[in-house]
Amino acid sequence: MLNSTYDESEKVPDFVTKIQVKCNIDDDTTGTLMLLLSEAVTNAIVHGNKLDPAKTVNIEVHINEKQIISTVKDQGEGFKPEEAANPLDEENLLKSSGRGIFLMQQLSEHVDYEEDGTKLRFTLQR
Image (cartoon, rainbow, N blue to C red; front, side):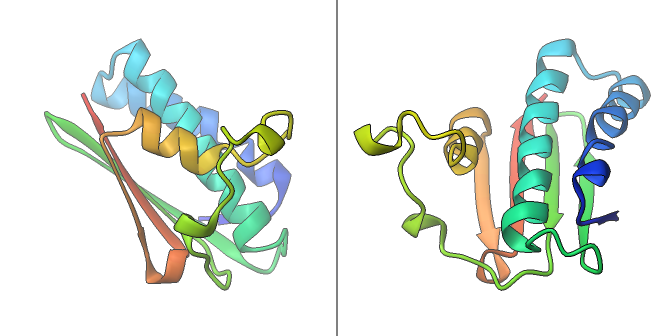
């Protein structure tokens, strides 16, 4: 569980490195997991919980021989992912944010938004 601050989001790389060592995950998969989990946690902190340090973000990672299933849950009001701006649209190409959902969809095997968009689950193949 993380509080909703930028400092807390910086704990993700160490968390993923511990998972890599404990579960013997290859470097490519670890890099993808780190990118996606960092993006999901940052989105939950900034967009979901609006940087409210009284709110938390819960992270779960389940690993088996074939998959890594990660869940990130915030305490925000939720959102509809289908209403998010497309980062590939010309007016969005130079924006410094707005690529998280796109990255999730491109780099993971499966993405689900649950509980009105406050819970994200993505799956990576090992």
